[in-house]
Image (spheres, rainbow, N blue to C red):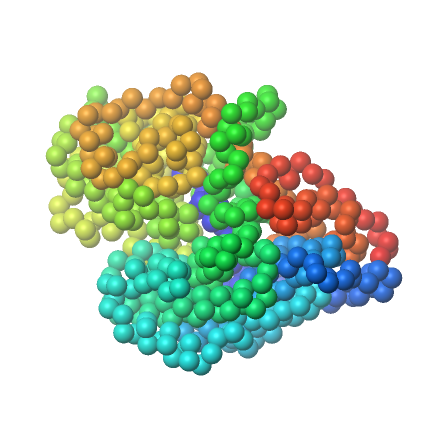
Length: 567
């Protein structure tokens, strides 16, 4: 069932990296021969100053302005520091905006981890800005005491059932606060009471403050482009909503888990969601070369075996024959099988993609309820393997199978629950099944590559591209099942479209960021590497940021290393 998602590793990586004890981080870096972070920032600052002695930074008079929403420091934040510095070298006016401190809630908090002190966090990220010579301010500098009082009052006085629908100044602050509950608790917020309700209200207060601060910052700085990581959760998304209201172009970016140092960018879209909105219609009409076909097929073959991801739906001890799988799951011979593949419940790739159902659980519960009226069909719900493979503190407190047991006093005998850690191959199960339903998981693109049409119960990037059956509502799903819509094989043309989409997302839309061999490192040989002509990829990133162009095919560019000592 592939990884946590195609594109949501940034949130997990931000949490894993920032919460690791400093001593352990230092030991790890020493063992790996990785440069000490503080020494790295000092080196960056010296490199920049040495370069500018002979080549002062170009004047930004009447230049276009670029705003970077850079809330706090995390390993991949060096990406935006580098791009911001490269834009300044090209004469653009750049300004960075950190969080600066939110009184109630910030994304560095989880149910098991306190956030760092706000002043220390701000000092930390500003030291990075200073190393790269980047002008900066903070969202908190644009929030008043009255804002804080009003945000607290609104969050406290709004009935719990009305929080999610709350909108302020065109920004769905209630929805954003709800999304952040998934990250905070590492699971779906089933019960909006007690601690969950308090965190919800605190998150709402912060969403309101970030939205107000973003609005004032945009009106004051008046940027031509807004750049931000993620763009989906409450410390990032308000900048996008406020930019769109003002007809300001925006760029989002995210690290991408298929290999270290890989990133994805998007113009006027959410990079995290991999939609490639501007180009997919034309690009899916272009056939792949034989070399490109080999690349995508080999990649997904390795993916399915767990050789390039720890989250694959494969296990070396898995039942790998139809007969073995039927015996293990007690499936009846000659009875159609409907396979259900939920996401990890708190994975960012399953949050905010609702179309036919109000949530992933709404979908799963509807399937279980329907199963009682179809005793002639076996239903298998295969939990995401990551539920059992993540470190304990990142596993959902209520696994999906347990959530189903809590919801239904009696589970129909033809519903078979497969826990995340069970040695059951998702791929073999999909081959066996007459219907395969996914929510937003990577399996939804893997199955078409195997000639199988998945049913999409939400709105991931691969839905609506000509090789899925897209569920429109619970009633639509029931109608399809009632009609025994069990022909799930794709034509060769449909498989070809899926291959083109997979190649577009995984290879054309993802690239290795220059001068960053590992998360948190900056390995440019000198500052001239960031200047025009220093790196073809940086040249193109800067051009695409300013010209609002699709970020595809940067992966074919090679990084030009400027000779040591040239600066």
